[in-house]
Amino acid sequence: MTNGLAERLRLIVVTDPECGGRPLMDVVRAALQGGAPAIQLRIKDGDARPMADQARALLAETRRAGALLFINDRVDVALAVGAEGAHVGQSDLAATDVRRISPPGFLIGVSAESAELALAAQADGADYVGVGPVYATGSKADAGPPVGTERIGAIAAAVRIPVVGIGGITVENALPVTRAGAAGVAVISAVMQANDPEAATRALLRR
Ligand SMILES: Cc1ncc(COP(=O)(O)OP(=O)(O)O)c(N)n1
Ligand SMILES: Cc1nc(C(=O)O)sc1CCOP(=O)(O)O
Ligand SMILES: [Mg+2]
Image (cartoon, rainbow, N blue to C red):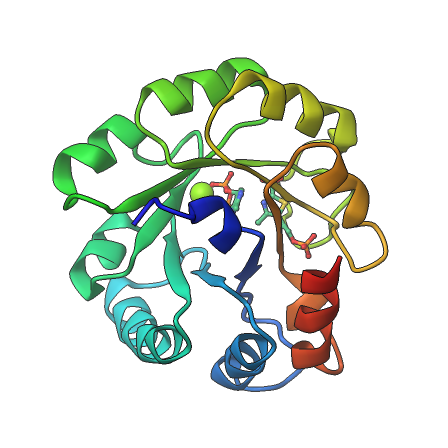
């Protein structure tokens, strides 16, 4: 599963309940139609059962499209529905604990805003690290100050696993993130709020 992982992480479309008044599933379908290689279901503070139902519905779409599905925070939901992986932050389950309870090949992403945290995540068995916010973001209330593309470069130079930049990334400013050393970018608003999520996905992938 990790073969070619960096390629499959070149764009992670992270879901948000705010998607321009459209059904979430329609926006995700459009992103998949535009070629999104990975989707992350991110529902903060949702109950487990409706989340699992939504994850199963999403998984049917991602499998049809040949894309990966990650579940944010809720490793239990990811395991229950058979998603390809989970993304955990510094206050979620540690990668070592996720590894202990997950099947071989289960993909683990860990948020790491410094080279030290990224090295620790790598040692704990993470498959990739998410680094952010690269730029200012309005999509995460508790995001720290922007770390900039220099931090992406420093972390990418420190670890062997792929680095994914997140936070405030758009078609216009994505290129410096990958030029700095990120394998890919993760976005919410650039796709979820786009008038045409399929075209926005294609445009991001072209960058
Ligand atoms: C790819 C990617 N990177 C970082 C994050 C942020 O995760 P976390 O720090 O746990 O914050 P929340 O998303 O849970 O609010 C992410 N979701 N995806
Ligand atoms: C979910 C998330 N995590 C971040 C981090 O810094 O770890 S920033 C962020 C929000 C990303 O949304 P947008 O693409 O709309 O800026
Ligand atoms: Mg989290």
